Length: 200
Image 1 (cartoon, rainbow, N blue to C red):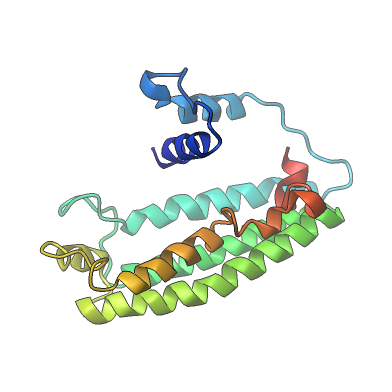
Image 2 (spheres, helix red, strand yellow):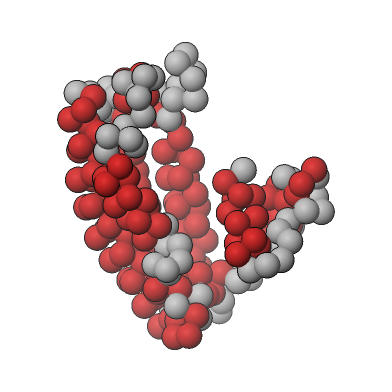
């Protein structure tokens, strides 16, 4: 849903229509894209470290899926309701850097390697600001449990009293995920597609 919304916003900004063919309003476009990727031929560059080249995206995707374990979908539906859920999320997001560095290094090419170093440096540096901002929320709640954080916002979302922190968090989140204007690791003019160059 977020990918669909992202595509629609970019299409609106560029004065064109976004995904609108697959499903109602193009809602199934991400599913169609995923199906397309499953049936694509796997191309491994001859000079790459083949085992690490294949393992890098698997590591990154596994960490991304494991992070969802502590997210409360409702009051009673949480896969792993641990007391330090927010620390768990920080630890998992910090480990995601390893998959990116592995992918850039295993490609055995200078462009993916430089892109992976840039991306890792950017991700690690912006995690510090995100962590400091989250500390403000934790001080308001008094707990590291994500369920407690959600329950504490039943009457008033923390985005209202902590609005300056939200703005900084939003900017840091854009940088953490390499979205424009913080997409330097994928600078097309000099690094082609960053660490993803050989994964085309």
